[in-house]
Length: 150
Image 1 (cartoon, rainbow, N blue to C red):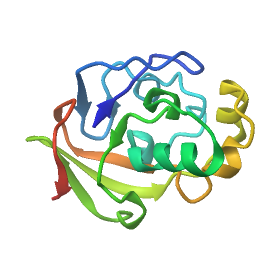
Image 2: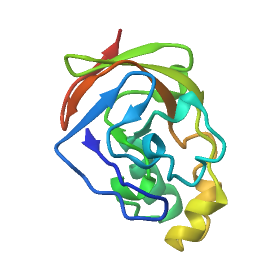
Image 3: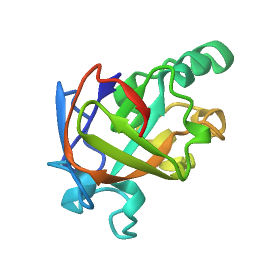
């Protein structure tokens, strides 16, 4: 599992070793908790933390010849062996403290393809663009923390 965050839209995501999650608010210092994200003008509690499958990165390389780095997904948590598409409406525990609820599947956007300049990225991410979540119980998550059903 890897972690990612940035303070404003279009900035490269940094990959810290931990993220501080605030229930009902978002990730401390992240663009959506600060109101500086691309979609901050359309507030949604499901944007408090976003997850993405590392297996999708492998599929992009294999099926589309797209080499995408975890931080380029612009999602906060890149998971491993956690099938996200079945977790809408379910609660997950990340690490020892944080509980999140899957609110909706993320839909790909042309913005990401344009920002990264990667042709066909929009099409390649249809039905596998991650999970938008709200933070139910706050705390700190660390790189490599386990993710399991709460």
